[in-house]
Length: 230
Image (tube, rainbow, N blue to C red; front, side, top):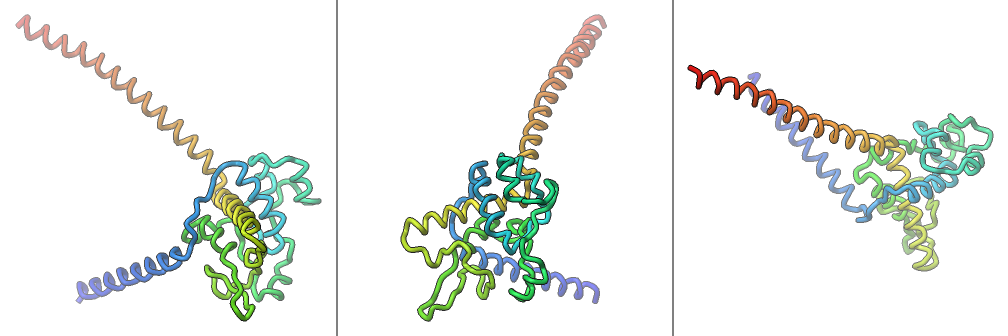
């Protein structure tokens, strides 16, 4: 009987995994096939978009203004962005939670970890920002998030021409780049540290190997000498 229960549990677990995988595939299938950059210039431009546009409604509670200095944001620009807030203050929405709840029905999600929480990472953000459209009846919609309350903040659905649309796509790409950085701001440091550790281990292993050869060379020489004397 116990074996039967374990068999049923295994089947349900596999079924659940299949449903989850199908859901992820369905979600990522509508995402644009775009490469999200990781260079400092793109991330800085994205920071400006997030702070000056997205923070009207959204917060990034795990990111502080001081963290933006590491991106190379000029201090006078940062002072303009933060106003009278402390340099170590978190990036908090300009719209209080109660007002946002009254306007949208809920508080807009924090963006600190949004790329880590969504399948597709930065591609999800890009696709969402460029996924707005208006149907033949003039009703607004979004290809990625049906029923989204957030307005078309970049005006993608209303771009007058191809040049405007490309500019908006560039802004969306930069915003996605910044949010990927925000989800893991120490990733660059960890990569550098990991590289240094690997180099250290390679050098150490090489030295230990050479040392071992030298020691065993003397041992083998002693053994050979003893055998010949015998």
